[in-house]
Length: 261
Image (tube, rainbow, N blue to C red):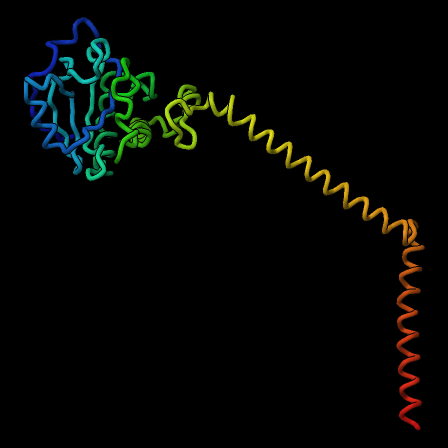
């Protein structure tokens, strides 16, 4: 894996007694070149361990032995290796080459630090997963966001763990159904939307039952008129057909007599 050293002054010296236990995935909301520029400024007071561009090129800003100023959390910064990804704006795509390079880097980090299978919330985090949750759209809930599932699955494939990535309980419970406003999560769906939908189904079933009952009454009337015994109904039907044929024969005979005259 080819990595270009860029360097940044914005980091802690060492890990302050912590060890590396996780990876944090971030989005640049910009280009790799711009990220290179701002991370080299001491005044910016922020950095990341790595950054990956649209062609898959990988830059390093902080040594893994030091803690980058990336997550907005002292504890997380001291334990994580953070990776920035180009994209995050509607005119800056997060490319497939970027995702593939990130997957290779994550697999390499996981292998070297003995993480085992990568699982979100255990040894790999999204920036928005990290308290104090100051970046709620990073890295995936923004234009051209990061396909983090692909990265995790691909990294696990590389390391021989397969590619199944199950949604966590928190993801399911906090799922923003129907792209609703803030707070429109699974709790609200279960407690407010679902009862309404159940009520609608009950009304539809009641209406259907009424329709079926009305149709049954019509069938009963017809059965009573024709006779409830199937043989009686068959006899009545046969007689009605026979009467029609007799009338037709009589009519044709009368016409033949008129012609003969």
